Image (cartoon, rainbow, N blue to C red; front, side, top):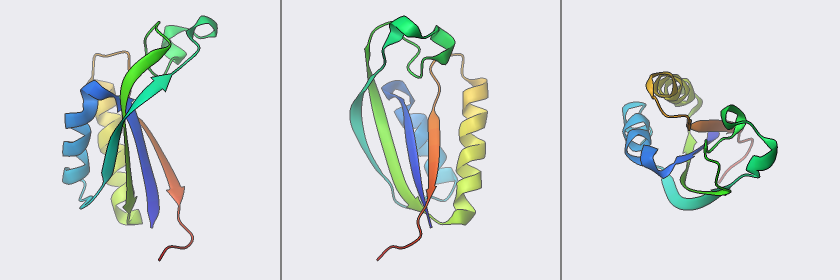
Length: 101
């Protein structure tokens, strides 16, 4: 079992939901969040939110996913990031769950 964490600008919410469903993720949670970055010290290409403003309306998804589904999600998100013309990208992190109930 893996914990899948996805953060992105709120504009990507629909695409992420579709990607998770297509990858066989049967249940997930998501919430609106405010992303923050100190933009003075970063170039736009290094800024997760691709905005000069310090705060950005974002969305956070998380799901407990069988290891077999993780590669499908990562591949789909990478493809989406490559084809999007936005400077903002979808970010994914995967954590191994050693125990759960």
